[in-house]
Length: 253
Image 1 (cartoon, rainbow, N blue to C red):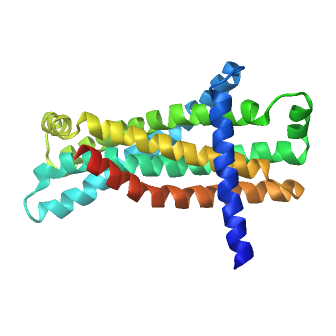
Image 2 (image 1 turned 180 degrees about the vertical axis):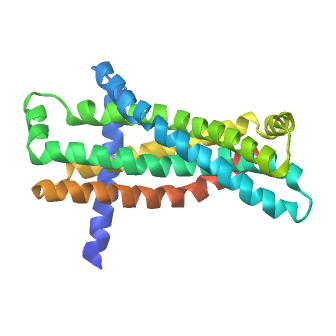
Image 3 (image 1 turned 30 degrees about the horizontal axis):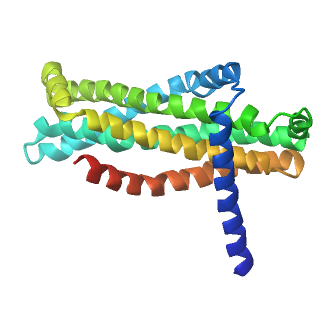
């Protein structure tokens, strides 16, 4: 029990240390802009297709479920407001972040882990360069820039999917649907989605980079690192979402 508690405290301490090192490196020179652009393409552009698919499906399913549920009480006219608000506040940030944790988080952990077991990170240190500056900062900044945009995109695509189902299943006109969405979503809702996605991106990248730096046992360790990141970051995302939602509600509502 004592050893396990000590291990958990060491883990938290290393995460905090890596956070401060990343912050310090990101605010000082040199900054590797080309690496940042590469990571934006890798983390953002290549996640567009899966983001569009999950956003569209969320809009379809949520509109269908809420529509038939509210139809029993004659409340189908409230479907656009409920779906759009649910998407931008909760569903889009959560599902987009979980997908990114599976795709990007595991990829970062595997890439840095492979570099660690093949002693490439030691080579970076031998050249007098900080591995945090070269490997962590570009990925962290790129993830925190792209994931909020992906969350907004998922919301937009989900609203389009919802409008299609609302028109075909419940005979809700597109104009009415759009007007209700615009009347429901406020600027602070968009800001809430942005904050959540930025925090989730920070968690995913931090866990992935830390696990990559601590990967051992060759290729087997690389595979375990990828799995570890997906599981741990997903759990933290789901738990932290409750506290973020509560704080944002108190702040804006």
